[in-house]
Amino acid sequence: MRRPRRFSALAILAGLAATSVPGTAQESNEAPLALVLAASGAHTLRAGSDLPLSAKPGDILFLGDALRSDGGTVTFLSCAGNTQQTLSPDGDVLFESRAMKLRAGRFSGQKAVAGCHLPAMPRSFVASQQDAGAAVARQTRLATAPGTFEQRVQALPETERAQLMANLPPADPNDPLNRLARAAVLENNGLKIDAAEEMRQVAAAWPDAGWARSRLFVLEQGSKGVNATEPPPEAEGQTYALLVGISKFQDERINPLEFADQDAIELTRLIDATTAAMRYAYLLTGTLAMLALLLALTYPAKLGPASQMRPA
Image (tube, rainbow, N blue to C red; front, side, top):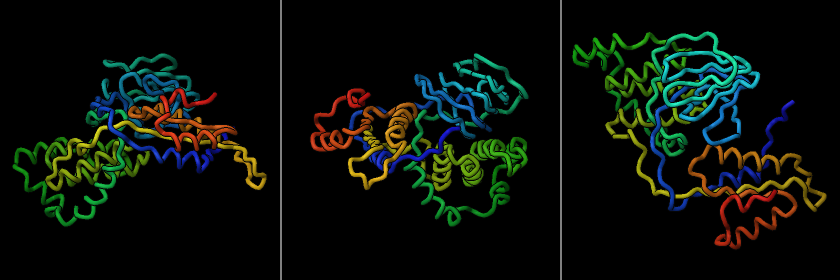
């Protein structure tokens, strides 16, 4: 039985202490190739990584990513093929530039869909700053919204209004994909306030999808007349993280932490697999971890590449 996750406070705090310094280039946007709709026990593998990550509804996959059922179930959309399908429990699919490649298992329940309704975005979509901006935008949204949805629709030119009503799917409050499709149509017709309302429900249904919160920020800023199609320019930099896991202590009054060192190792692997901008992730474990930590903090200029800082 898989043990529950009990990350040590020291490892988590060290991971949260990651900072950026000048040096790295920003990621370019990429077209999403797949969108996970439902998953249980399945995993994603990011391009260039061997670390399986739990697949969650709202996960986006890009070129070179893979999706494995691993005995569980997963239903996803193929953005390139505009199809929805469920992968068999023994299934393994790789997403290539023009089509998905089924490497094991089979598809079931395959059906045509209108599409993923997803814009191009970076692989590592960090939404923290945009989440803060979205909170501010929500405070002023009602004050700046001109009338009701019906009034905004009626204010459109007749041709645009007819096109909107022809393309807008009927509302289904229990279907995030329906919300996503409605948000895309509303945005294309200039109704960004209403598109933001739909995207807010998508973000609520898929809480692990950071890209949804980022899209919400863009739409809310756009509804106020702010050009937020791209994140605000930031100073380029490298990201550092220091993760420390200590399971046993010399002081017998301190209860041992059974999984602290292993948790630090797993967090480091997770950072490596999901954060493309991470260049230096220092991992310190075992009985000498505290001494190594003190040396690292005292002589930061002596730190070498991350691979040199990870004891076996």
